[in-house]
Amino acid sequence: MRRLFDWIKTNKLSALLILIVIIMIFSNYMNRTVGPTYEVGSGSPDYRRVSDMVTNKSAPQEISSTAGERMVIQNSTLSLLVNNVEETKNKILAKTRELGGFMVSTNVNNPQDAATATITVRVPSGKLENTVEQFRGLAIRVTSEYLSGEDVTDQYTDIKAQMQTLLTTKAKFEEILDKATAIQDILDVQRELINLQSQIDSLKGQQLYIEKNAEMARLTIYLSTDELALPYAPDEMWRPQLIFKMAVRSVIGTVRQVGTLLIWTGVYSVIWVPLLLIFYFIKRRKRTNSSQPQSMNN
Image 1 (cartoon, rainbow, N blue to C red):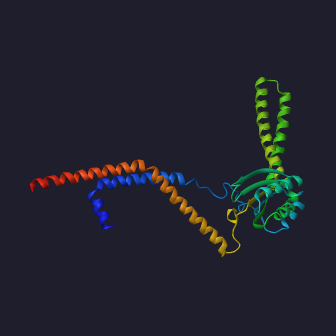
Image 2 (image 1 turned 90 degrees about the horizontal axis):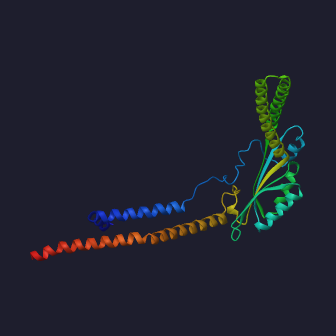
Image 3 (image 1 turned 120 degrees about the horizontal axis):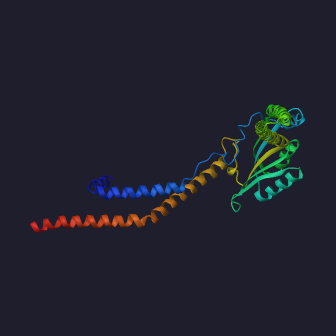
């Protein structure tokens, strides 16, 4: 180490250039290997923040039985460990259609290795509990399950009240329009009617959105042949097999990073190797020039 420091002191320019090359290699390596971070939610929904969380199995029955009085948007999430992701996905989609539902989205990753899939479907709210029960039967293990309900009755009632007010106002303006004779008055009333109709259409869209979401529950299913690929909280604090898998993956990841760094270093050798050769020849010439006067003096 001392010899290294002595070399740096005597070859400051060479050390500085080598340091610059190393920084260039590392900066490009980090830009390529470090991807954008994103939260398990970006891609994946934060089902824990939904209000009025339902934690027992009787909750969907209670929600369905009061659907005539209260409007509730139901959401459920399942994480399933399965033997075959593609086969299970097809069974889920077929069962969804059989129950009168439909697919919202589906995404399958890495089908040749440890396959994972995310499926989002909508099923009639009254059949949500039965649907979840049938999907559980397709799994080796259910690693996590979340069921939630959001009461939107007040929001829906408020929209209806606003629509009624706007419709009443629109009817009054239509009466005024029938009696108007001046062109300017007619234009002013028509402008107000167009504005009112735009607000009514917007509220109708919100009303329809709430009705459809309350009628059809949303169900998101995560499938994988690898337990570590599923979004869940382990039910046991100490699981040696799981810890061993995580450790092996960490080692493999480290080896890949080292290999990637070596490849980058090799590619950049077209820059740092010539620089080192130049420094070497410059240093050698200096030593030769400094030794010649001494030999002449002797």
